[in-house]
View (cartoon, rainbow, N blue to C red):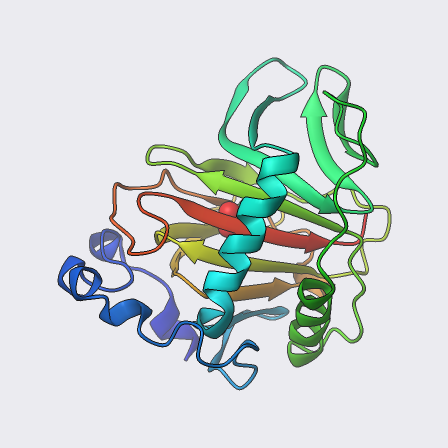
Length: 243
Ligand SMILES: O=C(O)CCC(=O)C(=O)O
């Protein structure tokens, strides 16, 4: 299955359901029937210690998106600046005991939103349970995240190759939920300059990596304009972490 996953250079533009499916609502037709993720979704091996569960969140996607909306009413999405002053193209908010932030004081986890000094909202219990379950399904055991970074991508937004290295316990995996418009995910090596393989992350996909792959460089290409029946042009990504 592994060799089917990665995109060749010419097929980088496809993704998700066709605009026709979206117009008819077919690609969202299974939303809301079953209120747990599909933990038996096909599991695709990305590399030694990285697994992709295709479309596993579709049954709960609407609920997730509504909860994201409620969180963002209290702690709005913000485009943050890197410590060097560069504006990030993805907008971010967080929930959980800690949230990942960046500004002139550096990349870090913070118990409160820097702009307001208010604590982040609690991580919804279900989200925590689901992240733990996907970690177990991927073979990483009982992961208990205390931070959930929520990224929102508009067309043109992306994220350069980077490592997730601000966590104190690098033995914990990263569990990533994708919702809305599809994007090309870049899965690199252990040095920034190593070439990255590419595959699509689509609505409902769950990607889990850890162990020997925990420090791989990864990122997403600029989001192409795409009309998703639920999220319009946007893509949302939730990454569950142990700060
Ligand atoms: O949007 C994604 O799928 C990746 C996000 C990411 O790499 C991060 O938040 O560190």
